Image (tube, rainbow, N blue to C red; front, side):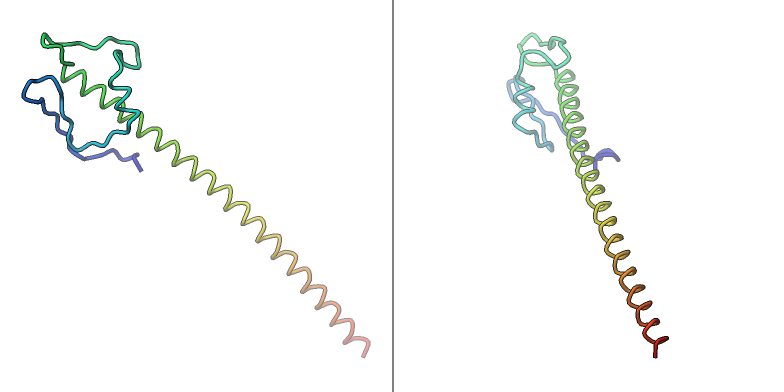
Amino acid sequence: MGGGGSTRRVTFEADENENITVVKGVRLSDSVIDRMKEPSSPSGRSQHRTASGAVDDEQLKKRIAEELALERARRDAEAQKRRDEFGRLLERERISSNEHLTRAILRERAATEEERQKAQRF
C-alpha cells in the first residue's frame, strides 16, 4: 500500500484565462485543498507568481506533489499502526490458545495417570 509508488498519470491544465490550474486524475482532501490555498507553502517559501497573478505551474506541481506525498505518508503510517495493532492482537490470541492447550494437556495427563492407578489397584 503506497510503498511501490503509483503509475497513475496526472495532468495539469490551465483554464482559458490561465488563472487556475486544473488537476485531473487526483483526489484531494479538503485539508489538502485548504493548505494549498494558504499564502505560503509549509516550508515557509513564498510562492512565485506570474505577471497575471497566477501561481507558477511548476511551483503548483511541486506543491501538489508534496501534499500528495504527505497524504500518502500519513496513510502509510496509519496502515502500519493498524498492522502493528493486529500483530499484537494475534500474539495475545496465540498466547491464550497455548495456555488453553497446556491446561487441556495437563488435565488429560492427570486423567490418564488416575486411570493408570485405578487399573493397578484392580
